Length: 356
Image (cartoon, rainbow, N blue to C red; front, side, top):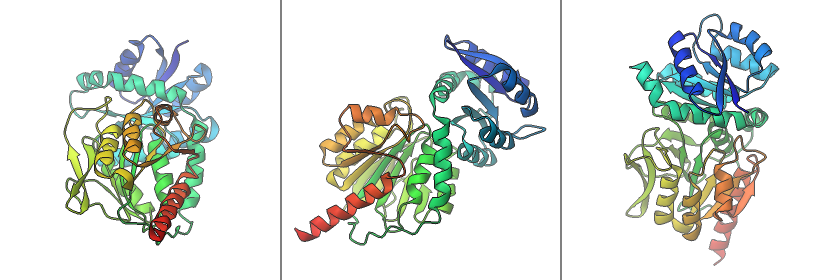
């Protein structure tokens, strides 16, 4: 049975290119195209697609307004097709908050050739969207709206040597937001790799920084890792943890993709295994594939303590499942419980260290 896709875009060229890319696979099929959401609304009723691809900026009704109504009235998997602009990235992040599963970017130049270069990514993300749990995305969004109001967890005994190392993919933007909103201002330094293209990670970091008690930024090369700060891998670089004297610092690498990803979670986790050892706490969140699983095993072998998001709360239970299957995880928990479990682990170990 093929996955049925409805393509919604005001550009006839994009509609044609997406149709060609999708229909060129054995397991996907475009069952219709629409130039705007109003036409699409009727086609959804008639054709009952499994996945929508949705342009961000369109006439008559923009993608966000349509997405908000769709998720309220008929929740279904949506892959956003976004522009590589600052405005486009901010709108796309809002779309993920509203319940879109993921997004792909339109090339700025040479659209026909550029879209063909993205063909594997587009079809992979449609397949992932078809498997995603949309209700889970919506539940995360509802839950995070209350976290901003909560008081900080206090943990005065936590060592500044400790670090949190986080990896995520599909569904990860909202999962990371949920996790960081519950982090107290004096939590350990946090390094994060989220699968996301260049041009979007700065907007993502800025958005989190405006919401969280901790400081959140897109990572630069050679920064000292400070408590109460989170550093997000840029969309076109690997993020690594390194040592400089007594300090932990960030390193960025332009090496080839790992597990087809750049940034790669395995690259970050491997660097934490080498340079932080038992001072690292690993967290692997929702995502398709296995990036991070092998690195989490190496972190565990080096003395790190690792957590994984459970299947129930994952939008896509791929990366955490692989990490658990390979034996790299100590505890598996619901997304809403992970921050408290991490803080409790840090506090307990700090108290134990003081008694020794």
